[in-house]
Image (cartoon, rainbow, N blue to C red):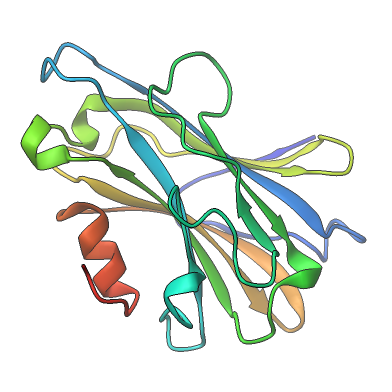
Length: 193
């Protein structure tokens, strides 16, 4: 039975699920296509962060143009440009046992592509969620429904997976940012091109 989390809640992943190593981070959302007249393209990303909350290097930013971490422990399964249909819109696979020891946290984010030009924001997005699945058996471990707390934000940190005393934990964050993907890239210590 999956655990349903609220914003700010933290839960053990590996301690309460012994043997869990291969996970799928599934992300989903619905959009109101009529608000701006333009199609929405939301993009999931993962930032592999050190103890200071910064990316180890540019290859520690996993997204539609860099689908895999250097060590192969984090894999983005591909860009869903429409978000159509039920279930997960995008997925990121994480092999917790293979993540570099230099990585303390993995931030999972979603941004709206070209949000400013399209006059789009997360106030036009509903039913956003993130859940963690055990890749071995497909069982849902936990679920976090982000609710409808956003208005002008163009980027949202959905959650973080982080190490604590040798175990992996999950933090339901749900924090929005203006400035889209560029603001997150800068916040995590990378240069915006």
